[in-house]
Figure 1: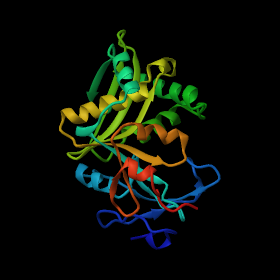
Figure 2 (figure 1 turned 90 degrees about the vertical axis):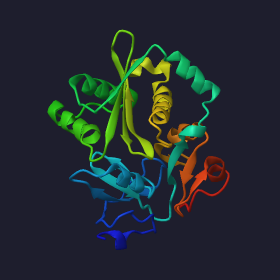
Figure 3 (figure 1 turned 60 degrees about the vertical axis):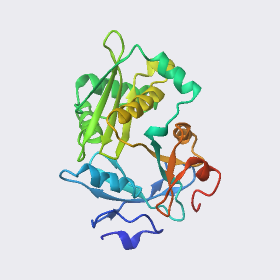
Length: 261
């Protein structure tokens, strides 16, 4: 497999024989002062949902058509985290958030990029993450579509609207028989009091239960990264260790999460 020999630290092998490319080193987005590296696969056609689920169980995630896996030297802090849907028990604060948002309607269907969603996404990036709009609106639109709406796997979209039918949140998830995987969620910063990020996770977990999907995947959890701490608050949850074994959250946080730089 191309690029594998250059990997500075052993990682989970991909579930099928593919060529992987090692991407350039960059500043770690999760842990200050560290350098990060990934290896990746570009999926030009369609990928069967069950195959992508196996990639997630090998510590891969996706961004658009790019499947990537962290291979940082001496570090395995990025750990896949998932919630067993059948045993999930919301906390008191999560139940309060659920009740607070019962006035919302949720449209579930095929992902579709629209001007309405694009406007919400831009406001979310600019006001919530402090990222100003880039050079040209057309270029931004292309990046928006490529990032969220050009998917090589089976994907579903959740559109959250208030009583006036105003769009206030959008969630993108990948779905297979074994998993519902959160890809991204963006929302109206003006509605911060609602806790829409929490509500979207609760709604998606509930949706997984309705369609008999056993696991809900939240992406990576990173020990020491404050922005990732909330993910371990959906309990019980499990984390994928460097030996390829899923273990309960209490065993992960209470013990070693992998070698550190």
